[in-house]
Length: 165
Image 1: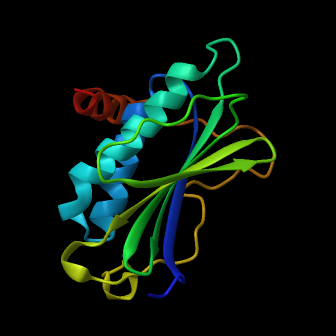
Image 2 (image 1 turned 60 degrees about the vertical axis):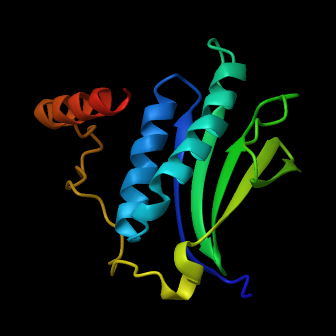
């Protein structure tokens, strides 16, 4: 089995209740992008549970930061959740999960490996062609902040609230 990472995507969040539906949306978008929809339910449940545990343990006055990372490596999809909680409880696990926790300098890294469907390897997963990342709006030369389009934000919030169930 190759341990070479083929693809990585991540998302940084604040440990607030909205982090769970944002995580679910992120998983849905990435697994759709990677053509791995058969794993959607399992990966969504795992990431939502791990992020939800951090949200539950985080202080509302000084919430933790969370990084959700999905990786294709060898014959598995790896979910990694980094947090900066001090003295967190161990993560809840589901039966049959291959999960681990590694201490970091300022927090911990919780990971869970899930086999790719049908004996696939990471190299066989159909990935989208990506171009160099750039901002979608022109950044002002003057240093003035760029305002978000209120209509776009409203549509995004409507969709997110519909998925939070």
